[in-house]
View 1 (spheres, rainbow, N blue to C red):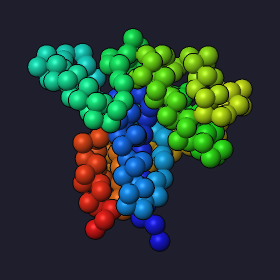
View 2: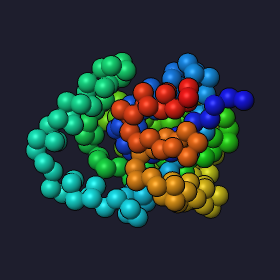
View 3: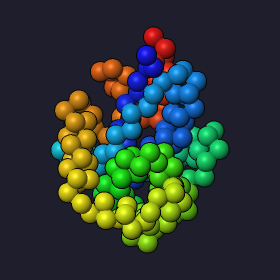
Length: 200
C-alpha cells in the first residue's frame, strides 16, 4: 500500500507556492500518494489564527526583511520565480479554491494549482479576477466556463468549507498543512520532516 500524504493548501500563500512544487518530487521519491485538500486559509485565520492579521497591520521590520530574503532563497533553491508581495496581497482566493474542486474532479488539480500559483506569484496577476482564473483553467486543460460555473456552485462552496473545517478540527492554523497519518507538519521548511515521517 502506498504511503499517503494529505496536503491542505490555499493558492494565496507564498510558502504554499514553494511547498507545492517541492512536495511532488518528494512524494515520487518515497512512493507516497498525495491527497490534495483545497482550503480557504482566510477561514482558518478567522477561526484560530487572527494574529496573522495583527502582524500584517503592524509588521516587525526586521522579520519582514528577513521573510523577503527567505522567500527568495527558497525560490532560487527550487528554481522558481516569486514576486512578493504581489500587487494584490492578500488576494481573495475563494473563487480559485472553489474552482480547485472542479479541477480535482477532472483529474487536473496539479496543473490547475500550478497555473494558479504561477499566475499569482510568478506573474503578479490577480487570481480573484474571472478573466485571470479563466486563463488559469485553460492553461490546465480545463474548460474555463465550466470551471467558473462550478466555482459559483453550492457543491464547491460546501466542499471548500468542509475541508477548511476539517483542517481546523485536526489542529491546523494555516497553509500549507501536511499530514502523515495524524502527525501534522506546517510550512515549506518542514518537508525534510515530512520525508522522514513517510519513510518511518
